[in-house]
Length: 239
Ligand SMILES: NC(=O)c1ccc[n+]([C@@H]2O[C@H](COP(=O)([O-])OP(=O)(O)OC[C@H]3O[C@@H](n4cnc5c(N)ncnc54)[C@H](OP(=O)(O)O)[C@@H]3O)[C@@H](O)[C@H]2O)c1
Image (cartoon, rainbow, N blue to C red; front, side, top):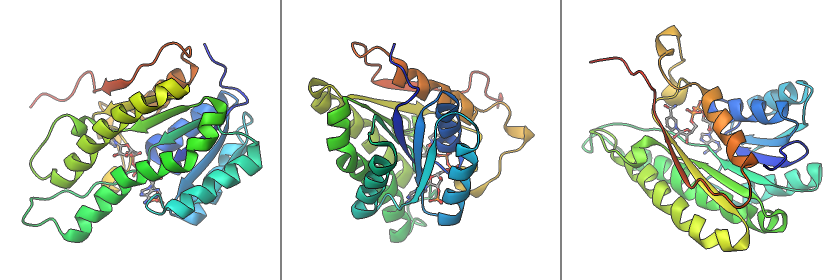
């Protein structure tokens, strides 16, 4: 097993949902985390709260994953704060849903540029630092990257793309000592899509469940590479 305490982890979209749960789990395990997201105020407040938990340290760098220069800046800030980067959790993502007749050009670009090109930029920005540390990359994909549905054309395209992209990058980087995995969750109780989770979402996967899997992946022995993990709610409501 690898030690997580004392390592430095960059989490995109770390201000809410799965990214925030992952940041909390890692700080509690003694890792230092850098979180990014677009809402600058929330990023700063969240980093402050994470740093006050008493485990590892935390910084927040307001960043839009659709901008490579902003992502390079976030990596530079991480290295300045912690002196190293051991893992990237490429988690930031958005959903826009609607039948193809209703889906706007803007919706398409928002989803593809964030969920697919944004992850490409995250990896480009962190590659040198992760090569130096022999680090780990985890992308947060989706079961929508394996199963399509009506109204999901942009989201399905982004997540099917991310599944293939992450697996190809895994093959590119394993010989360089960098482990690349993708976690593909089904429904997770977060504010994804602008809807606040309630007690009616108790059957869904919780952010903490995915966080636990990320910590597990970072701890896995260097010789073992769980490359693709599908996670579904064990007891979805019967229709
Ligand atoms: N919830 C689910 O059911 C579910 C299921 C499968 C997969 N997923 C995937 O899990 C990931 C996290 O989703 P979540 O459910 O935790 O959603 P969430 O609660 O809405 O959190 C999304 C995070 O991403 C950030 N973000 C969005 N666009 C961004 C951008 N352009 N640049 C930087 N940060 C950005 C958000 O902050 P700002 O808005 O401030 O930027 C926020 O921190 C996504 O990739 C999603 O596709 C979710």
